[in-house]
Image (cartoon, rainbow, N blue to C red; front, top):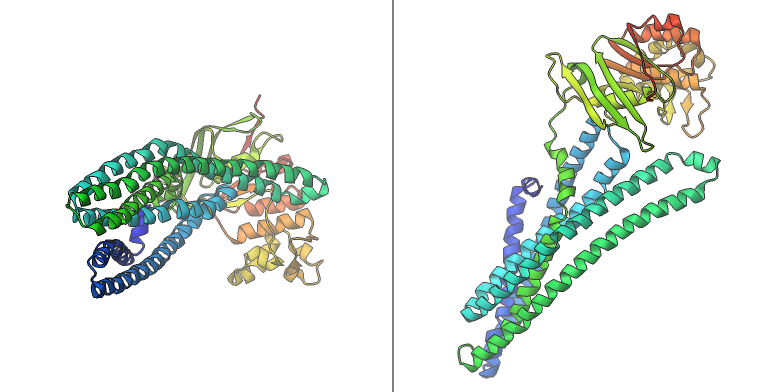
Length: 520
């Protein structure tokens, strides 16, 4: 993940490193000048004292300017990286149908977590480590004993994060999971908001959301506990370094091995060493704790381009099992080949709709395998979003019936006016004053169930797909009209229709019928 962040703009990273080095060198120089400044006072050299004061002011301004511009470069680099990652994220979910709340979590919470707990922490750690190196060199110019003591305390300080790394990682991962659960729970209730109002169970929505929200809050509090205790232990060790170095410098002064100003300057520098080292270690501990989140987001970068669906020959499910929260299990052994016209029937609960969700990647198998084979019978990754899938619950958009058929592609307008005849929608349109140009309000739909299904069927046919998967697409349409529509649908290359109310003569139009049974 860090390499990809750097590759977003290597030139900017070089500039960022340059200004970080300038910042830490000049910050160290500012404290280093305390030594000659105090010695000038002790020796009564007023002019030298003024020169050093002015020099220190200039050094501080250069450091501040470097900090500001370096921070700006970091923000620009990070936002450019997130822009590319979001594009990969959206592309991944377009080609790999999945949970909506999972997508929302990756696009919002996990990116925020990555920003605050990884890139920012790495940036902080890098600058603090640079500063520690600069201070070590400054102390070495005074006396090697000061460096030895600082190094000894630093080694002990470095051992603290290893002790807490496991706990902080666990706490951060729990936040990511809790946030995902919160979004998923919220989504499940929001999509059913009309039912919540109808049955007046708003209190249950509030209670359920509150319960899940409390779990998220507890996980965040738990992470803070781990970080706070780790920081406390870190600070305790730092105190030995911060107070020890001035004491050693004082002893060296009385032994005439260093100047008086060294005592104060070493104290400042010691504070800088251990506070910076503590911040660097704390930052790296937090950054390491995002390992699981980084692995999750990294899948978008590693994803190979999916093949177009016209390269797909066979969809095969072998010993597939789906488990539900109520412990129900559905089993599948199924094969759909290019050119098949298959009817899937079975009682309610036998898994007809679930079968289509498995094929389209919306439902994962608990066990068994699903393979998508090309025309050489080799398993490949395909862009499943290109499957012509028509679910039971489809969506109408604000706009005319025409726009809902063409999906706002004006180039298909002429063809849409022809295809309404294929799905027997023309007669319905004649009842509307504006016909196919009748506007639809998704919040106040006056269309019948059959009319909506015909619109969805027209939408599926006008956007042709090599594989057409239809879930109860004729359930609200009368038998005579359904027969005419089925005959038109079966002109498509590959059709899989889920239905439960077809007549014997309608079933005979298909090349194969697969009857699913409920699990015992």
